[in-house]
Image 1 (cartoon, rainbow, N blue to C red):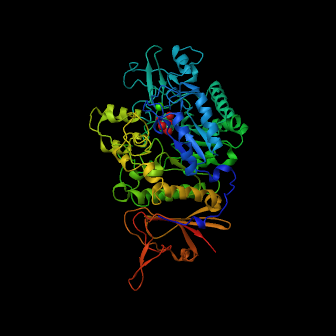
Image 2: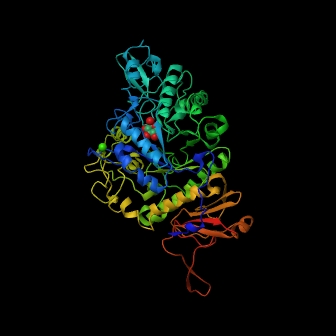
Image 3: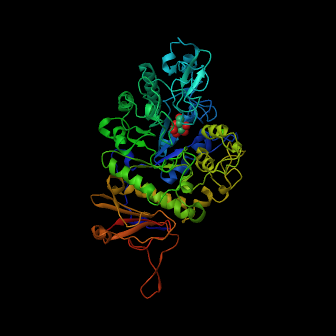
Length: 588
Ligand code: GLC
Ligand code: CA
């Protein structure tokens, strides 16, 4: 690694709004740090690791759901929105966490899951209790399809498929109707058409904001408005199932989101909001994140992580060089200076990025740092998922019993075999859910006991303890990227311009603001490539760029005309090694 901190501006850049040069870190609480020896991470564990996060330079911590929940989908099935699940702690511990984080200069963002609740939520219990319950209309209840035996295949009110596979309807024999669940059976969809539902949601959101929470990551928000009349869906568009077009981006979606903003965030200026929208295109994303529309600050989109899944989520195809970066470029270009991107490669629903997009067996360090460089310095707010900063790999899934995720387990169940298909082993959401690897001890420093999900064998080499003080580590590299985000104006306010370097595998872009310029060059492949700039870009390439950061492990060795080896740093035209990444600053 080459790093020249002396080239960075000395002062923090005062961004407006504040989150424009903030770095977000996602904690999956179940897998972050266990402190009471039950093998499950907890709030006390997050508190214990806040210093680590502050030391990394993190500004915002998004915590995946910690509300009371039967844990059918690891907390994304909430049975009490105003309490902490005893698995993780209690409200007192939560308040302590928020106040400690604030002392360290970090903000806490909660996960808000309001497309659905748990089947154990009192609202649903009451709704299900009778066909004429006062809360019946809080959820979607429908009669069986005429002409079919209630409960038998085909009798579902529509042909919609759940995100986790299988029908999106569950038959309730006691009232003779079906309820809608776009996710797991234990996650019934709330009926957002009902104003009482919306009131209850907004009231709950304000309760948390008043308590000191700094904002929300809003789960599965683009499916809250369903097509009136609930029509049957047309052919599926993988990786989505049948019916997706009948509930994604529904007719009242933006009306609801503007109402949500008006009723909650508008009264808490400066709060942080990011929506999760599986269906968003760069064009529709602007509807959510153009500040004039008063909906969200930014959006978690799926287009780049869904690349190559045309044959289904668990049948990924190989991606061609440049495919990933071309999608990211289109998002940058379309959102332009009007919208704002949530920049990410990983989360608790995705496999580890170095495994999915990099080359962990031959170029683990290089590809992890190259991928980091590629996404982190684009226009938007970078998100780091726990363990990504040390290049964690996925889990070792050999039998059905190794999975914990409701989606993966249902898939294995439908398959009816014990042998794990390769596509599931590589794409399962459990890849992102293995315990955080703090050190090389048996449970990776995550727990004193056997964790709820196995620690991968790779934890012995890949862990925080091994990288914390290593000047050549992925962790050290991430720290350098984070510092850059905090002080370089171009990385906050600058425009994004993709620069053609003649080879699809070379991802080159420039960020420019008045008086501040950054050039990012990444070789997204395991081959050597020489950057060749078009005549239009030659002048740009000959500007006085100075290398701030590079991921080559030692000082670069270059051969001069006389074939003597001389030590020097790469210039913008130096051939790029496999997965090489460089960040240049313009100096005068
Ligand atoms: C989101 C969450 C995912 C969850 C789903 C249902 O996509 O990220 O983990 O299963 O919504 O809440
Ligand atoms: Ca615990």
